Amino acid sequence: MANLKTLFEDNKKWADDIKSKDPNFFKNLSKQQAPEYLWIGCSDSRVPANQIINLAPGEVFVHRNIANVVVHTDLNCLSVIQFAVEVLKVKHIIVCGHYGCGGVQAALHNSEHGHKTREVCLIDNWLAHIEDVKRFHHEKFDGLNQEQQQRLLCELNVVEQVKNVCNTSIVNKAWNNGSKLSVHGWIYDISNGLLIDLKKNVSSNNDLLS
Ligand code: CO
Image (cartoon, rainbow, N blue to C red; front, top):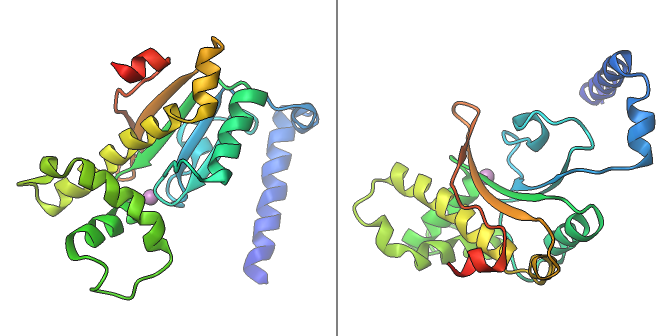
């Protein structure tokens, strides 16, 4: 348990440090949260939402799963989106993928070799959603090397998940009711710590059709 003890010690230092700058920080935050952003990102430990966009506790609502996938029937993700949009009234939903995503690499491997090259596991069912993305855009992969294919699938996966967010009944309803809500597709480069805007910004049902 020795290494876990240091986590508690570091937590105390972190809380003390924040309180030394703003004695009422946690007291005020405990009364309410009013984040403007919902972040949907990968579970990868190298892609921590708050740190990447330098936001303090209370400023970003977060959902993370393997390879930042938004599945139409995923009650976990849908519940997060519903709470963020209808209760917290976030202004922006950011789907953020990242280059070097292990989930995307595994999906690419599956799509090239089928599942027979290794023992099939539970996660293959999840990764099948990313294999679908490759199938939708298979012609774009012709002539690319492995590295280029991985980067392209990371980007296309973000774009696809932006569409999936926009097509949820929750976001549709918000736009039909006149809510100011935008959905964005970004990608994070783990090799330099920088975000790239994929310029897939959707602010209405009309944007989606165009
Ligand atoms: Co990842």
